[in-house]
Image (cartoon, rainbow, N blue to C red; front, top):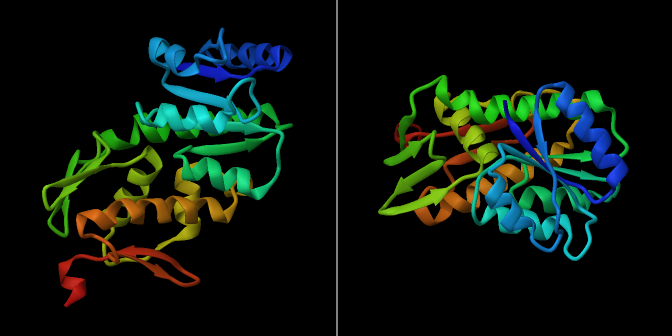
Length: 230
């Protein structure tokens, strides 16, 4: 049974979501003190976090930033705010998805299932270790090490990197990446993928791996190996 932490201050909505998730056999925990969200997160140890942006004391972005400093647990934002910068901000902070209120519960459960399946199942389907351009990529640990430096990736960043290096020197379309990451591209902004790829590239730069994930305009992305650079 997966444990989901629901950080939502609207009591009516909290109980509605909790009841529906429990019908799907998820364990749901809430927050008792919105000034101590990080502490309660660390004590609960959830497998996934659902967090609203508009919260008392500090907004969801604040708590996402703090949670990310301690954990790579998947995070999905829920928000009634519809400005594109909110989605961009959430992805820049390391969130895995963004769902705008009001939403159909079927969409919420589909995104939760896709995220849990991706995070907790995908990495076990292939070898946990891969080398790429002299770097060691550890899928299970979500780390990449090169030149005596390491970078810790979010689940989405590692998923993107894994898809690209497993098919190095081959273009992987944006549509395929979006479908694999979020199951249904109908509910995902194309910019969401761009933000995740850009974040991944920034983490690769200090490792001497900048420029090795190429953008193929109008097609997708490609990870190159040493042979491709000659």
